[in-house]
Amino acid sequence: MVRKAGLFDLRLVIAMLFAVYGVVLVVVGLGFTEEADLDRADGLNINLWSGLGMVVLAAVFAVWTFARPVVVPDDVDGDVEAGDQV
Image 1 (tube, rainbow, N blue to C red):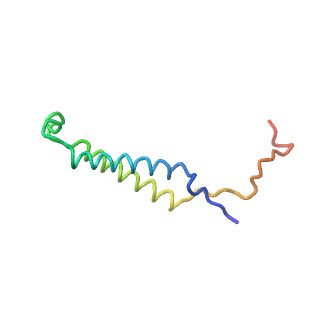
Image 2 (spheres, rainbow, N blue to C red):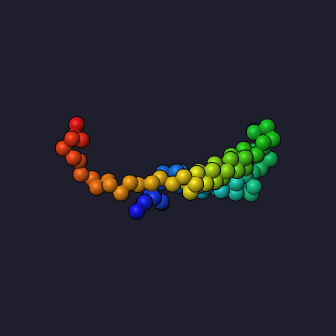
């Protein structure tokens, strides 16, 4: 039987973190950006674009996680054979 890493796959954890931070930045960029903030950034809404980039990156990581899951071999039992000792 083939087992998958599932929730403990590091790519999924990274995707979740980027998604949360990205959504927060999108909300800040859309709702709380003032004209003074835009003036300091040469008219570019940095929070909005950074947040959108993070959300896209999170989607890429999530698709990658589900498209190519990490397969855990069945023969891993934690025992070290006599020939494998260093």
